[in-house]
Length: 237
Ligand code: MN
Image (cartoon, rainbow, N blue to C red; front, side, top):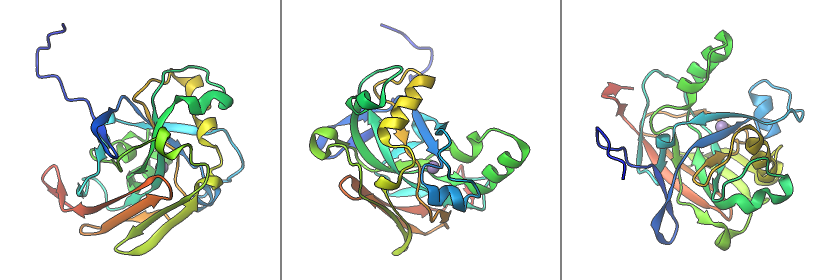
């Protein structure tokens, strides 16, 4: 048995719908610009360039939160609703045809983004980490196992702020399907059980304010609701 010199951190996890057990999270990969309408709104040509990835720390994921604290260092916190793929089986160099065999389940997640920091990073050629990988930057719904929901190839992806619809797209409009995304990722790293992949957001991303109520969902997968709280790290928003 390994002995640690400090208390070992608890493994991050996601709730599983209808199950008292949890899904342990290993790593979090995110796909950029996977819907053409969002690529366009961010000023890019939506032609089928290969998918690109960035990461968030595993403990940025918050399972079914009630409140997410408004993070520091930003005045432009954006919502991006995304299909979350939970990997349940290790694999490298996975073919698109076999990729779905590696999926344990699906959920709904928000890729919270400090857009002003991201814009500065793009301009200065700096990494995206501080714009994407901050505390509580990936609130997620409970996962649904594949044995219950199958592999959703279509379904409305939506997000409302204070009851008003901001984002609406369809899984069928993803530039790279879940199978393609898994295949590409597994050629760059060895995918492992416990890895999550956030698969990109449709158009309509926008700013959140303290006190906002966020509701989001994907037909056939799930929903989540939370509000934006006042502070993080004791810093007033
Ligand atoms: Mn995103």
